[in-house]
Length: 235
Image (cartoon, rainbow, N blue to C red; front, side, top):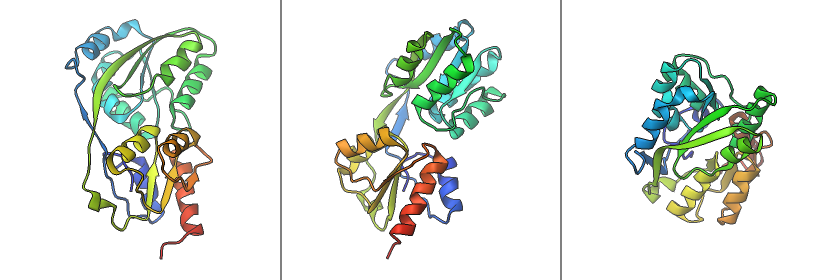
């Protein structure tokens, strides 16, 4: 079981290893509380920024048309699925996508690419997204503007969906938070997370984490899942 709301790279990679992947979205997205006024204003002034950064596929969908209209603005995305959506909407390749699909790695990849230059960056993200990315970019000396691209609300799925699930795969701390909000600490026998930050959130919430990917990427996450099934094959 993965908590993403749409089939993507994670589901594809798991399926290639022989998994039956069930998508159970725990978050539903809506317009921001202001109806998107701030986002529209920010995108209307996109030419004032050097970079546009998105941290989810939903965010990419909401800024992609503006990115297409401003080819001089460089683009960065947190992961492969987000990058693919943004590239499709913008009609051009994404300039920076980190190997490890977490915001800390995105900030590092951007700073490496910029090599000490100080630029203006617009970050479009969810209302509940932490300020980690913006803080890291500001610490590197960049002028960062954060705009809410969409709002997120908890979706509580049918608890019977937990029946016969062998493993839960969590690719973010927000996924762990949403899981506990929906189901409490009840979980499948195997819980695999993408990295130490997600593991910390999950454990603080009371989830028993079976394994943490050593390579903080979707490929590393899938490897960790496969190792768990090798060590603990389903009965």
